[in-house]
Amino acid sequence: MNSEQLPLCQLLGIKYPVIMAPMFLVSNEAMIIEATKNGIAGAIPALNYRTVEELRAGIKRMKAAAEGPIGINLIVNASNFLMSEQLKVSCEEKVDFFITSLGSPKEVIEQAHANGIKVLCDVTDVKFAQKVADLGADAVIAVNNQAGGHAGNQDPQTLIQSIKQAISIPVVSAGGVGCKTEMDQVAAYGADGFSIGSIFIASTEAGVSDDYKKACVEYGAKDIVMTTKLSGTPCTVIQTPYVKEIGTEQNWLERILNKNKRLKKWFKALTFYRGMKSLEKAAFGATYKTVWCAGPSIEHVHAIRPIKEIIAELFTENHG
Image: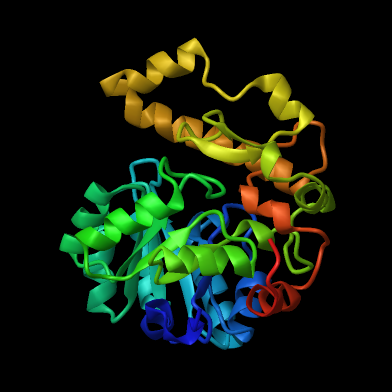
């Protein structure tokens, strides 16, 4: 794979065709800055900042220290009441790109393009990929069934190839890549770049608890399960003893409320908020109630290391 020739490199002006994926309550400024210093792009969820003012200050800090493109991930559905403000501030501070998730990116694409900012949209199927391409997205991020966090339903090959046949903008693959061998394989399917997250959780720059990092080292692909407990949307987590205890499905009351049209919007927001609090506790406090998001690519995590080393290995070693 001649990585420098993949379209994501040209789109974002980076050496290697990789975005350090935005990870809720995991991604931090140090990780994003280090990503840009080592030839890849980095993105951080706007929701990792408690207020819009903190988001603005964070973007200023990252832009001052970064050596490459930085992006902001926006949740664009009804659960994110701050989306319009987050978008406005990010445009004012001239981030390099947006990644949109879980909703229509129409407003983001319009405002971003008015400010010369690129937009990449998370998609899980061909239908949505066509919709965002028609809206003017600069690229899609094809989220497959091996992604960490909110995973898709299709395997990488099926998803990438079906989307590539339907649209002409770049298709970035998200999920199931944790080493160079896997990256080469997914590139062979037609991927124009990669969004990689889980292998960076166990980095020295990550601010999460040591227990979370150690779990990424000690657990593997077989220990990843899907849960709807955190945000209402299926989400992949490490199957710790606590996750085994609470189960992975919403209970009957949660399901009924989630299907009620009048209550659905508010229940989704409440579930999302509760999930955020649960994840926050797990990420920053080593307690029995640990809920840690990760994808099966933690199979390739064997030690807690600097991001510089993790990136270097992605492009220098073949191991599966």
